[in-house]
Amino acid sequence: MSPPQSPRPSYQKPWLSYADQIALLSSRGLVIANVPAATDFLRHVSYYRFSGYCLAFEVSRHTFRPGVTFEQVQAAYEFDLALRDVVTEALEVVEVDAPTVAVFRKKAGRGRVAYRRMMGRLLDVYAARELSAKGD
Image (tube, rainbow, N blue to C red; front, side, top):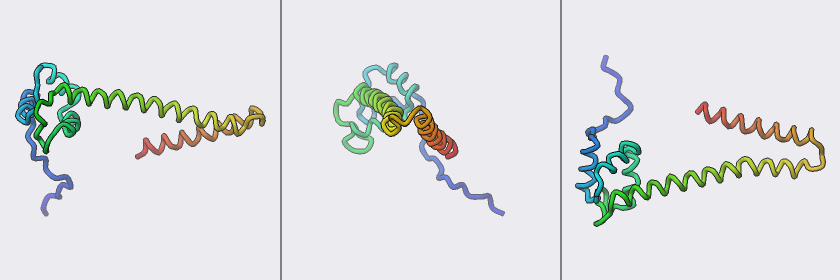
């Protein structure tokens, strides 16, 4: 009986140290003025995540436009991180405020019990959504 075949393809890329990752980026044309700072950044973010932000600065795959610096790609990453935080915070406000306002307007003048019932239903919907998301 032969061993079962792995559903995943084998990973062909070799492991690279941080120094090797910096050398690879540099060989592709990325200007790295502060190697220790770039190494620290890659330790925090990872090469894989950083390489996604490099795509916008490449002429062709793995070839950077002349003069592109590590700091420019890092700034794009940091901008995206800040933008994500702002958008997530804004969505959280909408997620909480919109149902509250809708319930208040719908139940205005119908008493405290009707308001509590409607809010209870909304909380049940959110709880069910959270449970289903955790189960995925």
